[in-house]
Amino acid sequence: MKKITMALSLVLFTVLGAFAQIEKPVTWSYAAKKVSSTEAVLYIKATIDDKWHIYSQNMQDGGPIKTSFTFSPSKDFSLIGKTIEPKAIKKYESTFKMNVSYFENAVVFQQKVKLNKAATTVKGKVEFMVCNDKQCLPPDEVEFSIPVK
Figure (tube, rainbow, N blue to C red):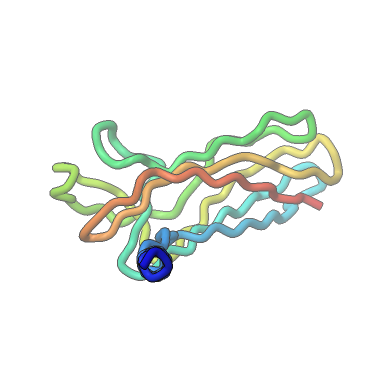
C-alpha cells in the first residue's frame, strides 16, 4: 500500500509541476555600435510575447513599476545623457486607475556612452514589470553584459 501511495504522489507532483511553469513573456537582447572612436550606442531590446506589455521609463508614481536601467560604474566608459526610448502607447488602465505608457511586441532602448578605452564591456541591470489584460507578474531584474569593440 505504501508503494502505491508513493507512486501516486510522485505522479501527482510531476503533473502539477508541468502545469506550474514560470511565465517569462519578455526576453532581452543586447548590441553595441561604435559611432566614432570615442563614442558608442548601446541597444537594449525587449521582445515581448503577444498580449503582454512592459512599461515606459517615464511613468508617474503610484502605478506599475517603470522600466529602469542601472549601469555598473567603470573607468572604461561614461554615460552620455539618459537612456532613450521610442514613443510609448498611452492608455488608461483600470488596474492602476491612471494613464500608463507601455510597449508591446518589441522595444529598443538606446544609451550613448563615451569610451575611455578602445574596447570595453558595459555591465548593468534592467528592472521591469510585465502585464497583460488579466494579470501582472512581479517586477523582474535582469543583468546584462554588452561588449563594445
